[in-house]
Each structure stands twice: as C-alpha cells, then as structure tokens.
Length: 348
Image (tube, rainbow, N blue to C red):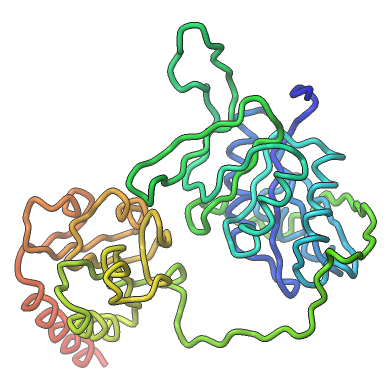
C-alpha cells in the first residue's frame, strides 16, 4: 500500500428519510479541524436516493466538497449496498482519513467497510487529533508524524486508550454523537458536488425490507435537553429519583443519570451520561449524588453551567462545578424545587 496516494479527510454524512443526521455536521466540523492540521480539505460522502438536494447543508457547515452516491437501491439503509457504496468511494478517491458516526447505522457500516478495504477501525471515539505515533519516541522504532490519534474508552470505560493506524489507509474511526462540535452554519453556501455511482447489482446478500415501522417515544433525547437533572449512586434508591423528576418538571428539563444507576437497574441505558453513555452539553446540568468519576465527567464537562449537590465535600464533581452545595440531597433537592416553584408562580 502506497500511503502517499491517500489524501484528504472524508466523512460519512448519514441521512435517514432525506434528513441529515446531526452527527454528519459534527463530523464535518471535526473533519475541518483535522484537514486544516494536515493542509488538506474535508469531503462529505452523501449516500441515498434523491439526496443531492441535501448537499448544500453540508457545505453550510464547512464541507469543501460533497460526493453524492445516489441510487434507488440506497433509499433505505441496508448493509450490503451501503458498504459497497462507501468502499467504492474509498477505493476511487483514496482518502487519508474516513470518519463515520457511531450511530446504529454507523456501527454496522464502519466495520463492514474497513474489512472490505483492509484497514483498521477504531470504534466509538471521543477525541481525534493529528500527532506523532508512538506518542513518545521509542528507541529503535520510527516515530511517524501527522497520524490520526484516536481516543476511546477501553475496558468497560475504566481507562482511556489512544490508538493509531500508521501502516494502512484510510485511518478509520467511528465517532460518538454529541462529542464533536459543529461549526457555525453559514447559510447560502453552495456545495461543490461530485456525483459518483459504482453501480449496484442486487444478489442474495441484499436484504429485502418488507416493512418499516417507526418507533414512537415520548421521551426526549437527553442529548437535546437544555436542562438536565442527573442522579447518581448517592440517590440511594430508584424511588428517590422522584425528587429529581419533580425538579426537572419545574425547570422544564429532563432527568438523566450516571453509569452506576444504570448498572443497578434503576434507570434505562438511554438516560446514561458519560464515557460509556451519552455526551451532553446542556445549558444547565445538575449533578445530584454523583461523585464525579472521570468517565462521567467526560460526558458532561462541556455543559454551560454545572450545579453539584453532594454530601462529600471532597467529591471530584466539585472540581468542575460552577456552583456546589454540600449537604443532604434529600433535604436540598425538595427545598430547591419548592423555592423554584414559588418563584415561577410569583412571576406568572
């Protein structure tokens, strides 16, 4: 493999029902950072049926170029045709870096593509940067420059690993949604579009979709919430989350939790904040009965305002909190809820 042939940062722009997933814009933003460090450009790969009209949105968020693979076989996501499309794009254009969102689709697609093109894949990354590998010089071993350093949780989130793929291209990673920052949108920017279609020949590997059933949920995704009231092991019991629900209701926010709560079976996984859960950036984050382990901090430390309530004054959560209250949460949370409710009633 001639590594010099591979240039540019490419991102998979996931869309469903002709609506671009937010992760695509996040990847374009991070891709732009990586491309600037390498002195190259970022290209979005848009795959689907009748999706060319979406290309300008990607340009508005920073994509220098958009490759559109448009075919009726790509109307709904299916592993085989999508893997064929992306692998064909990589074989033709030879990107140095290829990023995929760690969504349900991306986690299925990424490994299939990397296997087809014989390169590595680092899954569920929370940080990407350009640097040297090995990180520190090792006697007798070449230190390669301008490598993609991919950081992800390992061993169940108990440690952080930085991984590189120095000998194969492209360097591939799936990236956790909500971790990377979108760039500021520039309305009116037109995309530099290149259309590419490798051709599709359906065979026995193509899944036939008989029916699409849309999931209906009344739960708001915590990644979209402006105010989160998050509880940890210190809540003591699942019943005590009622006081957090009351506080969240007054604030028009959502309840979330730490990994310990999910492990105990008190709350479902989709409410978990942290390295092995979801990464959130609300305007206000209440950390109630949460000690502040590094895995949890990684998922919420970018919140605009962090309010910590904990009986342990030495808890690490206070190191990142903007406001901290040391005391019994069973007394503090109800009192805070009643005070806020009274203030809101007064102002109505």
